[in-house]
Amino acid sequence: MSEFELEVNSEDAEVGQICSMYWLTNEDGSFAYTVKAVGERFGMPASRVSKFVADSCVARSASRCCSECGQGFTYRSRAEWTSGVRFWSGRCGACVEREKRVQEEERERIDAVKRAAVNSKFAVEEDGLAPRVDSLDLPAAFALAALFEDAEEISAGISIPTVDRVDRLTPTPDYDFKLLELLVDQRLVQVHPCSPLDSFVWNKDGTLSDSYYPALASYYMSGSGSLGNRVKQYLANLSPLLSRESWPDHWVEQFSSFWFDLAVSECKAYLVYMLQRHGLNFTPGRKTDDVLRHALRWYSIGQVYYFIWRAARDSAAYKMRDGVPAKQAANSAITRISADVERAYAQGWDVSVYRRDSRLPLSTLSHILFSRALKLEDPMAYSPIDLPMRRVGLELAWKKINADTFERLIFQLLTEAEGYENVDWLMHTNAPDHGRDVSAIRLRRDPLSGHTAQRVAIQCKHWLGRPVRAVDVNQSIVSLSHWQNPPFDVLVIATSGRFTSDAVAWVERHNSSGMRPIIEIWNDARLEVLLNERPHLIAGYELR
Ligand SMILES: [Zn+2]
Image (tube, rainbow, N blue to C red; front, side, top):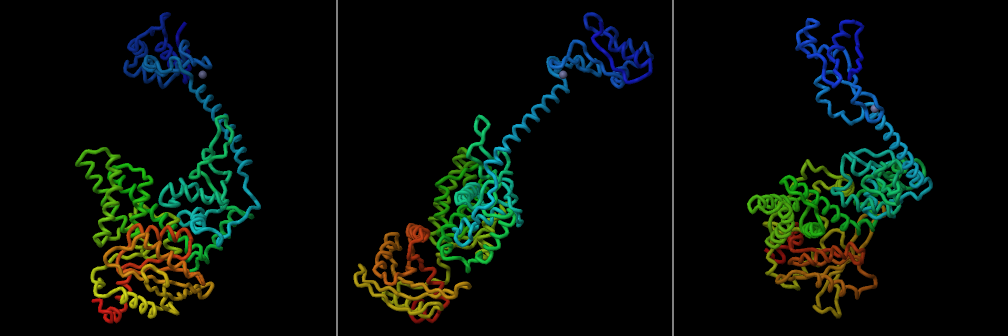
């Protein structure tokens, strides 16, 4: 019996004969005729025979068959047959296809069960509480708007998973995570059941757990009515409050800490990106946060970019020159930034403001805060603590005046400044330094509530020998606490010298804790800018 059964695709008898002769085998399985013999019998060059047979028929093997359905495998040529070991113990295409289909159906069935579980557990809430813009914290209010906007387009009610966005939600994944967590914890948004199944955590037995991956999920806004309208309504309510001048008081107080979080995230994204461009992989940790936060107290985002740019370049050079491992080189960037920032501040460097890198586009949250709320012309050059560095040409000869004269100068500055009224001396009866402070009423114009008045105390520190430290700031607060009737809203510490970084940090922490009074700090450079706009004071006090 021959090994092969033929399926000839021609009615021509001669074609059938050629194929039969070509594929005919002996008892031992060897081919009965050589290809040359087949060619000679039918007057065909030997070189054409295989091609002719391959075009004309399919040979099905009797011995080599699918391990599943038992169908013989098919061959087009002897060469295919001899090299056809890959089918030797395998299965035929049809069986493989069938199994795939069965698996596919099984997967679909499981997915349907999973989707049903998700639909029941994460059913869209129809009568929830809609977020009230003015009762939200600043980060939550802005993050909520950012979540439902991507690439300048407002979603129809269901957010795009953070990982699939065109524009980033925030500059870094860790800040994305933090804000998503905040929105979910405050029940401002909820996970939508149409989220991809793999955004949920499934138990080993296939049941749905309570966990999910925040960056993979889609969200909808709490409230009632259609999901699209909820988003529209929220944005409509946010719109009149968005601009900095219209912020509710608690947003003004939360601003500094929100800005720092976002600015740190901006700088971290740039650091990772720059190191990557130098072939150094870097995962930022706690220390990175601390160093960047510290730098941002003195410098704008664009200026910190400058420190990052230098550090990335030098770290790459360090790896090349000293052959240290990439990880060590990348980590050294943080130490470099920290040291550079300290040196720059101590030596009063003129630090350039770097531009945003176009390959690192602005996140939606940054866009909302920088452009729409603060309307900053140059976010890269902006700093909320706004503690300026001394500018060349503006320096004043502070040594020429004594502490009393300094206090009188501040007094007169306030008397002449617009927006300050009832400027007066504040006598300390039991202050350790018997210093005299200045008090004033500061009027702020608010487009919604009209004028608001703040009681402001200005403490003067004509300290040329040493900077104002955290303990000094704390002492100032304590000495001011004697005035409780009415209490002060704002304490300004004005010095002809500098503040230590710890003092600045202390003030930042104090202000973000929401405690009264809010502290403002004016250093030598700020006073020099203010006084240079008032040359008669410089002349009158012989400061130049
Ligand atoms: Zn089969």
